[in-house]
Length: 311
Image 1 (cartoon, rainbow, N blue to C red):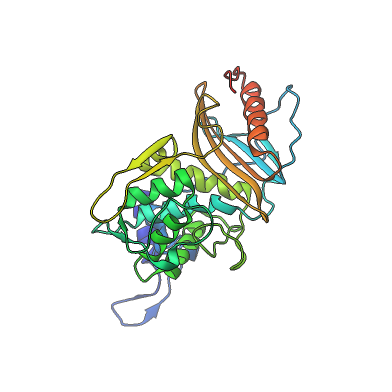
Image 2: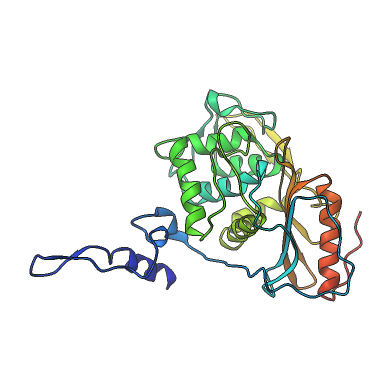
């Protein structure tokens, strides 16, 4: 229904009456929510978490080194912890959550993604080699489990009309989600080619969109290890999920971690425990793993749920 409304609204702009006189009928929606102005509204799903709806707690509130942190309960639509949730900060490899979204929304019909020399950037790699050909699933696993910059760049350079259009789609999707404080200049999160930034609030919305709309994404992020088998177009690659807490905190279903000297330690975590689905975001931390554990424990106690035993 929402899609039909948006589609209709998109085409309500300048129309011609039978008299031939041009009349302008203004849509009730802003340009960024109309298909004519923004192709990424085709799978629009708006979530506007209220940061004012903070659950009061008698539990001692953790003090964290993170520059920004946000814990939100998707089940009750309540905020459990906030610290500078709308401060613009670099996001490192958390960028790849949006890279995955755009790649899944625009799959190649032939499902063949050719690795180019320029795709082999940065230290984090799934192990691809120039000239190899992988499937979308292969690259998504390589990117989300092993934070492969080569996988992210290969997805971008194989996009219709190339890498620049892929990055444009990433930024259009941000606007389609109603967000204003995120900007992408590359699909990996590496530093050095522009102003790439986000907020904990925006990452909550982006991550929730990915979790709620793509079963494939949900499946990939909670996979501990994955084997890309040998084919005539590429080598065999074994991958292990590097996301913090996936195997040590019961109920954590993964999402993504990231680090650059500029961004510090960053982490988005999805927890499904005690009949609550919780998303946590940490940016610019000195100890993302330890602080996320503290914040998840605090959040569950605040909800009246006993945290699980964890390592």
